[in-house]
Length: 333
Ligand code: SAM
Ligand code: DTB
Ligand code: SF4
Image (cartoon, rainbow, N blue to C red; front, top):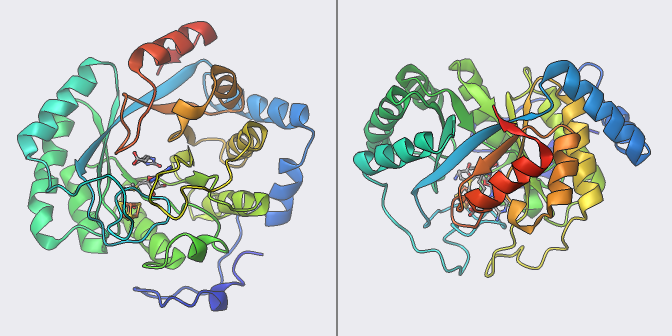
């Protein structure tokens, strides 16, 4: 059950510790599990019905990603190519120059993206980084794109500065259930993640928060991750569902892959539990068949990352996505 595991985490929280968490009105872990286990056809019918009540079922939002600071990250996230704790092929770089970031954003806009997401391999932005980041937000917004950043943990002042600069979304994933979290990262706690999400919300930005499937977690962990997301004071406006891209050299390089049916079930449950949120089919699409992606869209996924690179790993070529959209009769939002 949520809210009863504070004592199980042996890593001290870097920020204030929370009391027991409340569950979303109407969504207990048990309720969510019951829906998750419905016969597949019933689950998908229900997800598609909810989806149609809240969104145009044939429109998908397109975001493009840029890694503005690669590698050398002090955090030890077990899935990540950019952690300095793992021997991967990713080299560390400095923060990209503002002009270069804006030039890349312009290209993204010209290729049809409506949201531009910029990621940095930081535990948190340093005070000296903030001026450049604020300048980037202003410049990318001026192009007419929605802006999103994912820079690690934020304190309240940093969240206020980003919000004042006009940042629309902040991405900060809880990644898995509270129970499984200590198995994937030891340098920060689940509560640290929730604290940053609170700062983002209080500063008035939209929240993009989801997780990764296929890290060796149980089905109950996946369901409970969604319960935590739906239990936030406000559900995230964007919920990225990533399928683990196994990275050689990371502790999760050999994690047992999640089956497509189990993956689709989680997408459907996310749609049912967070009916107004964009559910983004995020990392891992290169390893999915068109049929699996079609089932995800049918189940309520309505956002993707486009462009052949995510942060460090591959993503389908634009041509492959154009073909997929044509085959399925989908259009960009
Ligand atoms: N450093 C920041 C942070 O951790 O919040 C931002 C960048 S981080 C790479 C963004 C998200 O990408 C992670 O929270 C995780 O959910 C996802 N991610 C990273 N590596 C992945 C992988 N190999 N497969 C799938 N998703 C991954
Ligand atoms: C999210 O949930 N997925 C994106 C975005 N937010 C920043 C990142 C996926 C990263 C995949 C692994 C890589 O490219 O290194
Ligand atoms: Fe660093 Fe983010 Fe990768 Fe974790 S997921 S190692 S915080 S870049």
